[in-house]
Length: 205
Image (cartoon, rainbow, N blue to C red):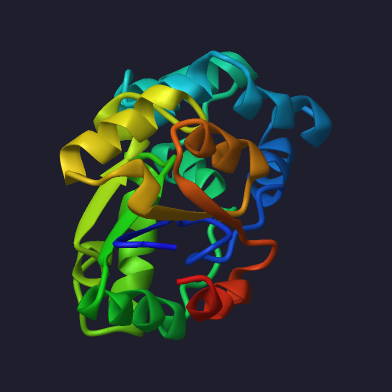
């Protein structure tokens, strides 16, 4: 494997993630059932538009109140929206950072502005750095690129922007569909089934 670039996903790889906690939080605030909220993340509409940066933070909040028929405050919405985000162990940040000695290190994540603010605050608490950018050479977020995984266009764009050859890139993600999209372009992939599996990376480069 002639790897020169390592691409890390965030949620479930670097950041602990419990996806169900956000639908559960909104269920407690609304009359909706958790199982009816979960599909909203996987179909075109409000949540994916926000993840692609097609609408603003306030448009998301207004859209959530309209969708659920509620009058929640911005704080209530933001706390529920970020409920899925868990800890960011500094050992994982340092592990990712150490590869910068020999490889270009990139982060590619489906995320959004509210989540970025939240996990950067967590990073500030566990490290002496202000943000995720301190631990990678380049960081690409879906809401800034206006596209999301697993669409081929986001991988094509990241490879182009970073000057990276697909065949010389290794992509770590916790979702097989995201890996499959990158693999179609010739990117080498590694499925992370639980976050601390990233420490096995040295066996793959």
